[in-house]
Amino acid sequence: MNKKAIHGKTIFKSNLATDIRVAHECGFTGIEIVDSKLYSFLEQGYTTDDLNKILDKYQVVPVCINDICHVETDDAHQLDEILKATDYLSKAAQEINCPTIQLVPLLALEGRPWEEIVQITGQNVGKIGAIGKQFGIRFQMEPVAWSPINSLSKCLEMIEVADEENVGMVVDFWHLWAGGETSPDEVAKLDKSMIYNIHFCDGKRQPRDTQWDETILRGYYPGEGDIPLGDWVDAVKSTGYDGFWSCELVSAKHWEDDVFEVASTMSKALDSHIFNN
Image 1 (cartoon, helix red, strand yellow):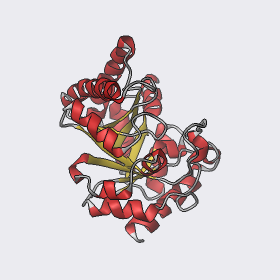
Image 2: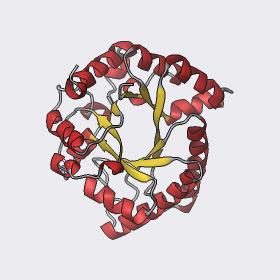
Image 3: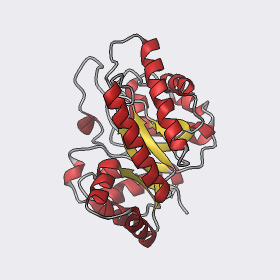
Image 4: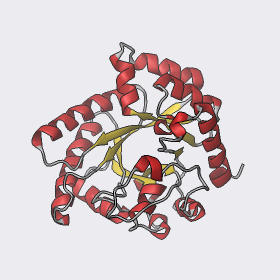
């Protein structure tokens, strides 16, 4: 089985069943499921058994569910809602044999001292990890380029506070590069057991004191942006990582294109940059 996966945000405007079919027909064996698409599927009366039938039909495996956001919150009510979502998604993930759910820290603690940010976020993630552990689910943390937790080192410090063995990292090329505080050399030194997934992507960045629009800055096929992709690919490979490589194109422009053409282009980019096909 090849290790190519497509992130559902790459073809964001199609539904989950279509995402799986597109993945199969464009050469992927894995898919990262967008949480809103999963919720929509289940809210319409379909079940995880129905989803398993579609996955089996197209021989595609779920790699991750994305996302549980705002894990940095210090609002008790919001945290309670996040923990409820964790329980729901962890159960669903277990039922479709999806090993991982992604966690995303954003801006609720922006401007606070780093010690507060890392302690609050880490404690929250520890609670999330404890829930997922009951279902055999792990969690990949994604540093976000414009957030306080925007680097590999900061994310690892937060994971240490969380102190749950089922919490690791996704190496997202754009977020780590655009955050400006992580080098490929740091990735190369990462223990491969901490790498749960790779987000292979390109893009551009702008000054941190300006308003960022991710759907524009990430709107580039691999090789069209400013990221030195070869350096990041080599860094990941040097760790011995042997899991899935997920292509992610968060692009408002490309969401208006034919989903099969977009997925096919991204599949070929993975072949070219990673699998030497």
